Length: 497
Image 1 (cartoon, helix red, strand yellow):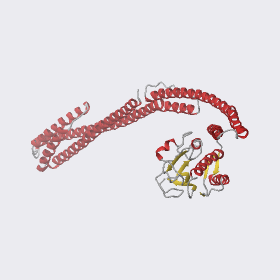
Image 2 (cartoon, helix red, strand yellow):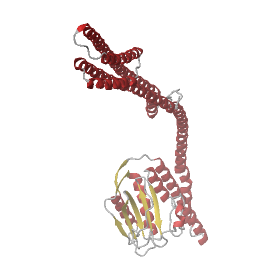
Image 3 (cartoon, helix red, strand yellow):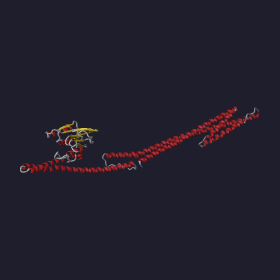
Image 4 (cartoon, helix red, strand yellow):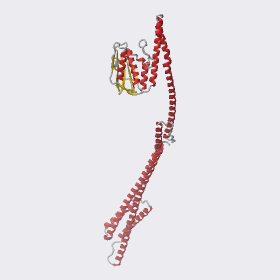
């Protein structure tokens, strides 16, 4: 059964119990109200009978005509009250019938008493009339007393019905509260057994899986949404287990491939260097020993052989450097890029002291990174800027940091030859060059190394440039660097980056 169906069933049961209790309470309340109205009606009858007795006493004692008229009015009003009474129980109906008959007989006796007339003074006839009137008066008063007793019994019956209705109302209320309590307990048991307990088991399953126990299964077999969720969870853990097994196999294959790369790197480092050194050495020996016997074309060919072997050696060194960058372990700590840039700038100036170049290095550029890898990255970026400003009249290289929307981006900017942004997608590829080697020497792998280093730090690098107006390389080690809006060139020249 679905959780929604369970909820509807529980809600319907609770609402039905509440409606039933409300109906029973309403019925009992109606009975109490009816009994109270009947009691009030009986009280009015009792007052009418009491008034009738008072009128009868006054007539017996004084014989006024006014008392006779009052008796007729009171008797008529009493008959009207007796007609409006509706008795519910059998005993009350019998009492009511006796009361009607008694009041009717009382009215007839009162009429007989009036018809007897005034007794004669003296003689036996007067005594007879007096005895007859006394008998009529006695019977009338006794009959009225019996009627009043019947009224009191009817009042007792009305009070009994009120007490019974109130008792039933109490019983219905207690029964209703009991039903609501049972429904609540049943609902709580259903929620605990059908919802809370399975959710607890699922939560335990998630803890087990989060702890690395991929073989754990929730194993719930309920026929509701939680049961289907459990099935999906078990299927998910099985899929994840298979995925991790595949990842483990891929890692093993990657480890084997890395071992092969290490072996290849060793072979490149040792086996390929020996022939290149031989080519370079024998070419140099041939130039030294037999250079005078060779013509200009022969010496040029030997120089080309030497240059090609040396360039091949540099390419091998760059490839080995790229491989080491990919596999190196990271030791993250605070690195002062400002001090590092000044050291690299000093070394470059010592290599070519005749060059006049303005260095602008901002203070306080610090990042959290691996120092040795950042040394390689900064070396490549500054050497690029140094190289591509070689043909600029007043070269400027600037190293700094900008902040935008909470992100800090470091940059290396120059006012050198720049490049066309249409070829920017080739910028960080291995052996990709945007300028001919005859114009600017290089292997075309330096920026690829820089990109690999920044990726190892979960950062990124991007560039903005204009042909003839320099280039700016931005990099970010916080993992959320992105292109900024155009602004003035950081190295001068006033060109948009």
